[in-house]
Image (cartoon, rainbow, N blue to C red; front, side, top):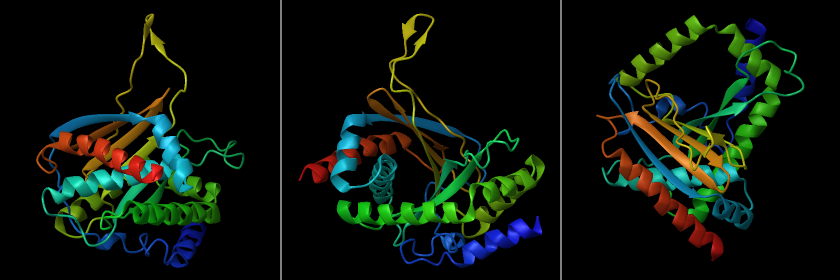
Length: 266
């Protein structure tokens, strides 16, 4: 365990990269926002849907990935939502993005959960779409390089060393810290590729997906994105008291998507 921890800390020490703005090491200094959770138990959900073909068009125009476009759309939606409460921060937000570490290297390791987290800064402080895309493209590139440098086996072993009980205690500790001071992350964003073909249930065709993920204490907003055939469906879940009018955030996804599409076609 000590060897794994030392390897991880060694990688972190070398991650003061300008492209990420030191996001990984400075995440504990992030400001509190309206979407931060301080233990409230009420939840509210909201949904949105956009065209997958249009997302691919943006991806090709900006020279990035579909995931980058998803993060850029989330950035634009969050900026719109936070501006309604005059709480747009002067620095990027930090999102935890679950990623798979299932590779040939880890295939033989017995584990029910081959998932790690990639930390990506979201430039909600920038108002120009192309500047946002450039920031996210650099941020995801740096985060992916960090994962590759650390190695899937190390990430998986680190997760296996911390059992469910230890993880639960750590989560509650982070939540308690979030209620009293700086928070570790601002939100969780999961982008999951879904089936490109229609699904059926009892002979009825599934027309859309409503993805949802858990809202953890300390980061009261969870955004889950799932593609299905020719659509990308967005699901939001957040604390009712801390993220009022959550449906406005879902509507903001459509506005942010339209703005990105316009910039891509120009």
